Length: 128
Image (cartoon, rainbow, N blue to C red; front, side, top):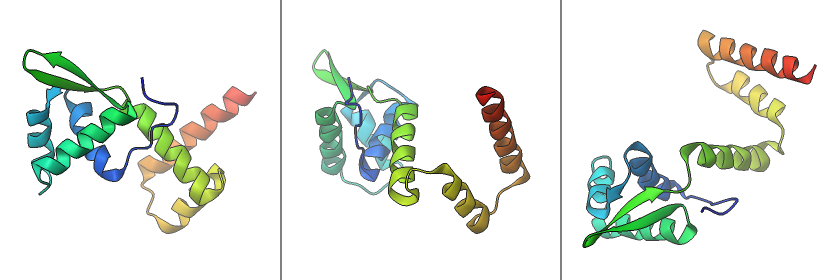
């Protein structure tokens, strides 16, 4: 089981992406999936996989003479951790300044604005 907060580096997240997309995978399949979108060497990818095993983000199950790997940390858990980390580090844990930053510095599509309105409406209904 992953720790309450399992920090995953950007490089490790590339390995996790392969596993979130399709799991379980052998190490050879993971290497092939990551190399399809990078120029990383096999040894680098295997090192990242071993780090993820050590962190408890991935499990290995014996399958004959090989191991199959699967994520223990879900994409949703990772996204929640990364979001909280960004919010705490950059915006003092406050959502308002984050949204203000994006509204001032990023182009929000009409769909983005509609989704934000729905979220705000849902939050207001929940707090009543």
